Image (cartoon, rainbow, N blue to C red; front, side, top):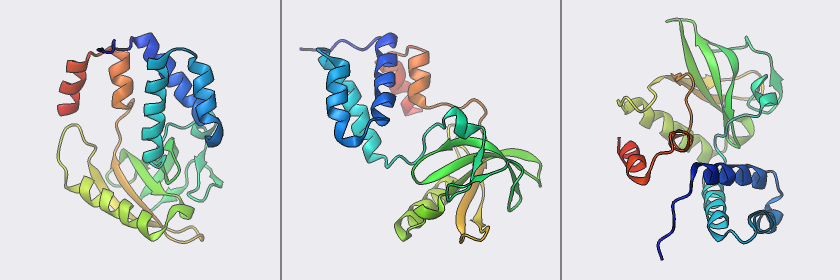
Length: 198
């Protein structure tokens, strides 16, 4: 039997439950989702699918809470006032943060421009995390596409807690996840696939 596509309101409910489930201890998530979804099998399946994808992504980057966005956070977790210089960049605010790293809005001094500055957390700088971060910055620096942010510079920053890798890339004001765009525009399957193919 063919499943009926979810409506915009249903996708919003999926998103709400997904974020609520993330705030629930991992061992209690299944019970939480089961209770929250009740008899809605399709809703439960969609929330569980997104949670499984989130677990596989290693929680690398997520949108910040309002409290986090109001501060700048050191890679090791301590707060740092906006205005701190990282190489040729001055931090303005947190754009997003996750388990492995933080992305800041920053001002590059020469040439003068706004950039997105991505830094690993000091505690996440394991050899495998460093390799992954280095590979990501190298790969992004070689890509030239209107749908991919351009990388300008890579380096390390040390404020006494050890070197923390970073790279500066093109800042896209108002950027959002492709899924958020698709939901906001109520795109159908074909439109979503066309957008993804681009």
